[in-house]
Image (cartoon, rainbow, N blue to C red; front, top):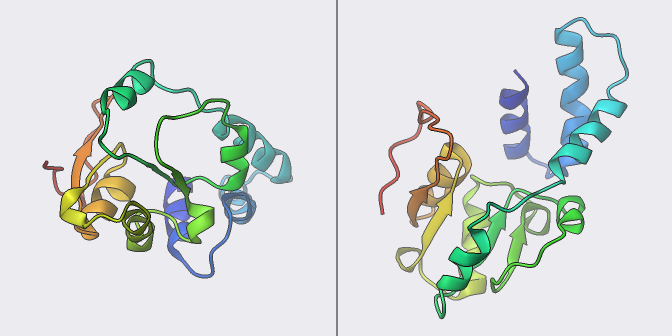
Length: 164
């Protein structure tokens, strides 16, 4: 239930930050389960957990190995998340949804990244872990896609297989 509400809310206008979205959907989830608690502490807990990002062990090695290949990070994060990151990535830029005022899989996110890179969609390989947000969004924007699937998750029924 939560993921459906979240996915829907990130795609509906007007743009809202993830904190605003969680503040709206978590009370609905609590009511659905007959929990009469105030949602605010759960929203705070959600952000304490989701703003703590740890890089996979090989991340820096892989990014550094790209050498002259241009790279960027496109994330469904807000400024609150970015401010909590305690690492530096060897990329040209990090594009977050709050800066674009849209969340992946919306094509405008990918289009903005392409504009900043000065590249055409067919010149870019988007690497991501979400069938819907990354694979679906990048393919709809005309990019080639590689899906990272560390946990062997099945593909989302609405998403075609990622192909390079």
